[in-house]
Length: 418
Image (cartoon, rainbow, N blue to C red; front, top):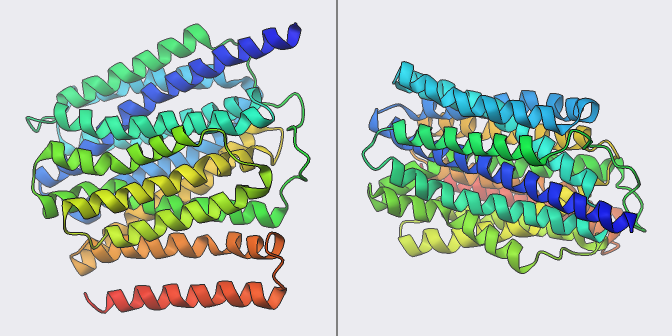
């Protein structure tokens, strides 16, 4: 009876964490989508835009490990409540000084807020769910956040219809305020981010080699996402025209595909296939991103956006589940995972800004980030070839090395076109 009661209590707490996190992510998403459009309206250079997004991701990178460790020590409630309350107040800075510098400052501040919310929320889920339910809750978490990634740009484009940022910032403040209210009411002070029992699995914990390969692949994946977030709206506007709603819908298609993919496969997979799902999903996303950079028609953007989103649906829950088995200190492990993703998010906009500045085109920037994403996934492929397909050392290293050479040649050949 006590187990049923505890499970029911945990269910309510998990739902509250998911909804509060979704509101916060939705607010940041609708704001982040309008930053490139506002920059384009003000004729801000690609290097400046890339630097602004890099500042956002740098803030997330620096604060995420600290947030995770603090959650393990003090619990998630005070950290989440503080971050969401601050996120509710910061947008009003724009009304004191309405210019692009203030928008970029708010963007960086939202990086700090997101860096506090995301790892602590994920750590809370990791400590409350166990066994076969763990992957399902992480899939639900990813699905909900993918839904906000789909809806955020659409709502942001509607609020930015008159090319003014005021309505967007008010919506951001409202979302953060609702998230803070839900956290304060429904998240008990007693919740901790430490597992009370080991994960119920017959598989041994991941090796150090697998851990490093996982974090490296996460960083490679987010490098492409960071570049795409900063520059994809501009690519769509230059290719398809300046219709904000059309741009928002195409921009949001990967998020919608991720949401639908997670909804259809929310049961997860056995532990034995987690690495397979992670590697295949990441490679599919990176390959789709590579082709997406050279698309010129609406149906092409939609098709490869869908494939990219489906790749994320395969890899994200599996990678979160695998990371949660590394240690009982869930705050620490998800702080480290967000540090790895933050490095990718940081390098993506910086790399994109530098390439755009030198080549005057977004195509080589997107293709380079895609190739780097595939390259960082190769250590996982090597482990899969060894452990799942039982390839020998020479064959597995030779196979991954051959694939790496092909990727380098492919990227170099495309650079010769610019």
